[in-house]
Length: 170
Image (cartoon, rainbow, N blue to C red; front, side, top):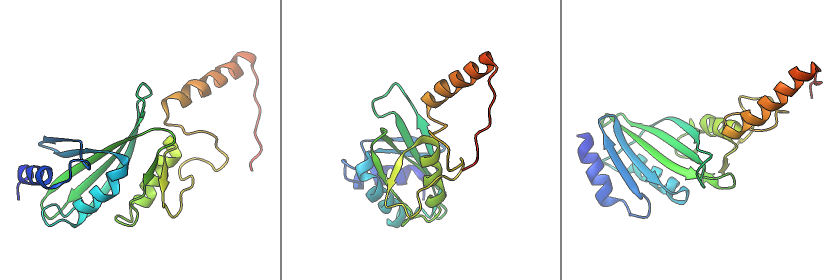
């Protein structure tokens, strides 16, 4: 089945409140959705006959500090049956909680923990949302654009004053 058919069929059959924008390219289809409709959209893509997405490749986060909803969360999906890639994108701010998709794709557990650890985005109904890449005593979220500015300023002040100290392990 052709990628263009899947794109057109999905646009025709999906409720318009679930997907507010779609783009098609040779690399795959893009669905832009609201966080409220993310879980139902992914259920549709996984279980519908003409999409059959079996693989969650990864979940990525992107920080755009100039936007009101500054974080973009991107779900990269693969339908091996139709040889089709689908990218689902949603926007969130610091307080928006996103629905966990661990019940649909068990591999999402790792990716959601990584997005939470690096960006500070919270997922509802995640079975084990805790730090995965940084130390448990670590404060902040390193991939936020504002994190490095504050941290680098502290580091520059330490070098300027020639102050070096060790923090005890917790």
